[in-house]
Length: 430
Image (cartoon, rainbow, N blue to C red; front, side, top):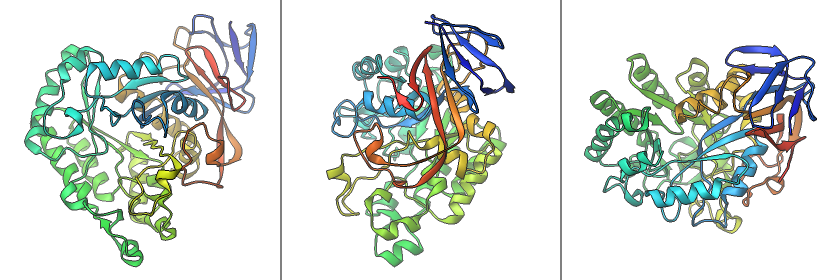
């Protein structure tokens, strides 16, 4: 069935214009303009029509951890947050380190409300000892490799993986992306929050900022040596941002992401001893938050990612030192980026949509111009609507949002995935 998104303002990489958007029954944009007619309408009055959002960093927990989340529930939450594509992290059980598990993730995602893009582990079982069969995985269409949740400690193995990845570019048709969780485990071991004033006050062992920064420094040096494309995940410290800024200025092929919680919350939140504020890497200082915002503003940080990390309530509600790290993020990311990042609306859409789509190699179908012939992966957002965060009301099987009860501005009204409305008036259609 064809439909028209009527009455909104389109914002994409071409800029802003007030036009209606007609979507054909083939899942593509049929026409843009005024006076369009179709079998159905979606009201976009007072709203912005944007290319759908792309999350570079989502933990969907399937296979193996379905108690916390499934691909279906995670994708539903993504759609409610305006996402049309989610890059699934490989710390599943078993780890996504083989073509068989990649195909399982793809199969589970085929009927979901977002496109699910599997990443794969850099090392077998994410153990940091043996390189995963990257050639086979690239031939199966995998373009992003990460041991997320664990930084790859062995610099010699990291160099080997980086050199091998550069030789796979021709087979993939674009650069292979190595996404690094930067953490030197010998420094972070035994720490449960950021090491600093608040960890001293609270008596909670801390993780120093240097645990992240030393691996950022090492991997920038290895990028210079090998020419591999490195994507730095969830940057959280001022020095990390500064080093990536310098690497970009030197012309090195690096990109970076920041999470919403790393520019909206600080380690002071841990004063409650509430494990909902335990995350990995940990919440940092006011100075680090300011540096993340500056990095977003000047383009050092390319994308906002959620690091959506659901945990079943009985697991997350353990004492602070025993609880697993992680927070929900898919349904709050747009509102938090709009209100807390310091970016204007077109810049917000850039860091949520077309810039992460480019990193993930999805620009043939996500984050592209709103024009005839383009795949209709779109979201319609009301930048002025206010709403109150409730973990229980979210689509996730888990409840661990650090923003419980907080009033936010900006909400997704509709999401269209491959031409099909999957969210209408803020409600999931299936």
